[in-house]
Length: 335
Image (cartoon, rainbow, N blue to C red; front, side, top):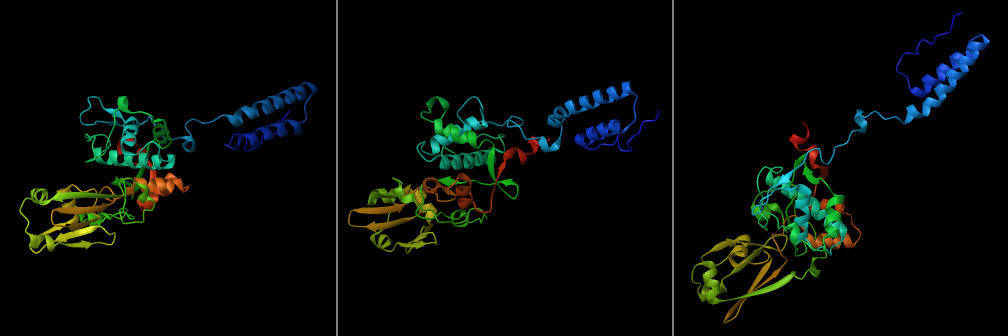
């Protein structure tokens, strides 16, 4: 007896189609009574095994592969701390130090992504140490952290996420409080960076550091600048603002400084400042707190309170950037 063979039976066709063809083959043949029973049994077995085959997954299938968060561990060496820290543990310490835990969760998540980006960029993915101060990023060790459950949640929900520009980690600068707008990298350092341009930052006025005053006696003023000012020089001070209302330069009849230099000399909170002089005191009034470049933390919280997500906040302050898993950029993770 000849049994019909389907010419495609051995080809890699979908499982469901394969099983149905087998059933049809047996059903269409002329069998003896014994063979007919055998055909029915085989057909039933095929239909029984079909669901098991359909749910079976191929573990090596490319479309099912994902990057494991533990596939490429990064350790951060913090100056002054003996043992290196796992990246995410370090970020918890940074966010705890840099942003109030009472801030909106979306602001905390934005801070976590910015801090992670800054850390990986500064340390070259953990190759060099990082300072635990504002010269890099503030940091609180685990044993000194308190009430940080929301910080831990923010870090966990953004695990491994960083900001990139043209597939490179960005310099994710951030600061406390703006004067209503952020500063551009070009105004701050003289170097233009496409993703660090000036942008509006609303809501910063609620910050306790938004406006402050510092007073100096003439003796303190002279000591700070390193020379004795005459009355004529004090009266000749001219402040030149840039488009963000910050001081780009301060000039007298004999000297000139950048606004950034004056801020460093007088230890001012911001480069948005005004100077008033009376007979005994020199008063400097400032708006904002920090260098002003990148993300304003109080501005981020204001946006989060308005319903904006962390991604929206980050793209507002770091324009033309993308959020990615850092493991897709780090060559050691791609080997």
